[in-house]
Image (cartoon, rainbow, N blue to C red):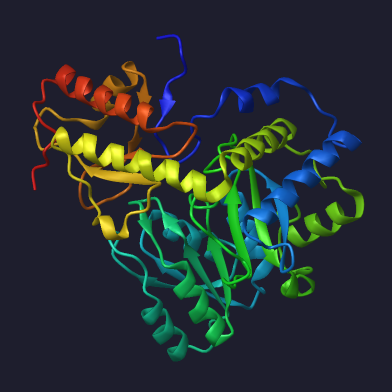
Length: 372
């Protein structure tokens, strides 16, 4: 097979040829032409969430987690108190990075098979007035659960608390509207549903809190307020930008807009999801989540119950047939994950299901039916 393997992961993901080709040119990091690309990307990102009047967007070098850490450090005062709504691995990561930065952190636990609850949050905020900020993962890709952003945002607003949203795996696909959903910070990245390449995060900051963010971060490189002020003044990044990543994202956004923006992307990913669920069901596989709480981003499947199943061998067999799967992120039951996002459509998903069928045959497994 002479084509690239198709990535069925939650990012990095499969990109288009146009996006790849955009990286074949070198750019000067202070050059006016590159600064214009950065400015256009920032304008386009703000338009996606209708945040032109209420928010600014600050790009940051690194993976999405860099930007989550930067958002917490920039937005939360050093004597602040963060409550993390935890229903998966990425929530736990957010709690850990909050504590490592010296912010007081509390966690309210939910099952990894269920969304977080705005009513439970309401009770927590009533019980502890010292909480200043809430952190929520919009789509917790540990299992694939879609969390109720609007209800959580409304609850935070009612209590006058700041909300930091990790929208890493949802931004660009699921609807997010800054005009009706109040958040202090919302974090996403280049290599997810916008179908760029990894290497750059970005944080939407509410204009009303910008001034209060000055000097709160304990990091030089991750100070989003400093990054914002410098970029507004000069048009440049403070430190060496990921130039190829930025221009690839600009090209990916052009394709995103030409496709029809967020509604069109959600429609394609939803078609991918339905094709995946139907195809895997024919092979006996069972999804981990109830469809009512499943986002069309990444699907967790129970592992086959056949004693010959072993994920690494299954992974290698599927890879040999052209598709890269993703390991499970749960600790209680054995699972694996299949992404629905990237520059792919239902045709590629049908091929992926066939690759899984061939992988099972290679392993001598008759069905994907789980042991449960």
